[in-house]
Image (cartoon, rainbow, N blue to C red; front, side):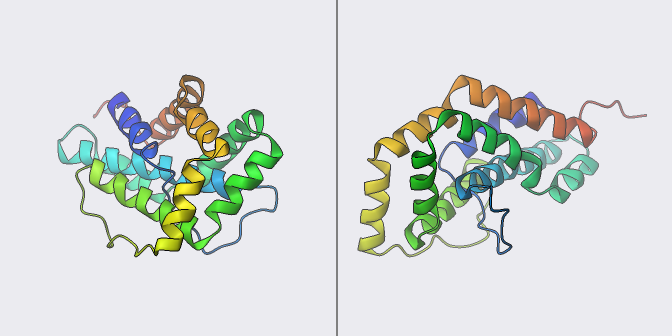
Length: 179
């Protein structure tokens, strides 16, 4: 099961993927945290599905993980971001991910998660206009973006995320012996 966690962390770090939820998030929650939490959980779900297809994980675990939502990880991602980024940096990241370009960039990250797990994405890649592409390039070249990616790819954050993912998987029955 450690492989599922490693795969989900690696896949989530391809891009700040994740689904943009239609429901409103709490006012103290950052869009960046919500998106990354969704990305981490999707990686875990896809990893568990793959492990089940290989006979390494029971379908009950897959069903349990499929029932979880990003709120099981958002608080942790939020705390990692808040402890390591300034309020201005978080505001900059959130502002980007709330734009059309940022949402499409996040959607591309989600599609990459499916592809990295060997799955067919549930939808086609979004059409990105030249203006949106420039916004994405500008954000990727910013110091905020570089700091964000370094943080999310750093050993400390990955360890914290991996610990939470393992706990979620364990709560779904990973590691329990079949009777």
